[in-house]
Each structure stands twice: as structure tokens, then as C-alpha cells.
Image 1 (cartoon, one colour):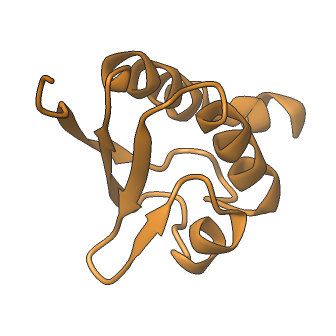
Image 2 (cartoon, one colour):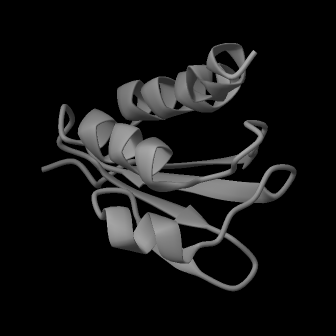
Length: 97
């Protein structure tokens, strides 16, 4: 059995509304497609990315840096999927224009 792979990446929250309910739901739904475990960390809190309540409790606003930490066999694929969501600003800023 191979040891679990853990990846980390710092990401800046760029969408105007930060990590709110809809964004949290998108993250949770994305994580459900993968076996790996994902967490988001701020300076003061850690959230399980499979929990909307945990993600909301981060209070992550636009401009804050969060650390994405993923452990598991498909960690790289999940890292790419979540990173793409953040880079696309969860398609929110386009919708509000």
C-alpha cells in the first residue's frame, strides 16, 4: 500500500462575495466526485471541503488567501478541479455584470 499523497496550494479568493453558500455548495459538489479529502485553511480556521457549514464558517472574503490541502489517491485531479473553480471566480463576477 502506497502512502497517501498530500498536496497544498495557496489560493487568493477573487470572487467579490467570497466563500458564501452557493460557492460552498459548488466546492462540496466538486469534492463528491473524488475520493481524496480536501481542506481549506485560513490563518484562524480549517474547513472540511465536504461541509457547507465548515466552508461558511471560514468567513473567507474577497482578497483573503486560503490554503487548499488535499490528501488521497486522486489528490492532483481534485486540486486541479478546485483550483479551476477559484481561478474562474466561480463564474460569479460574470453573472453580476
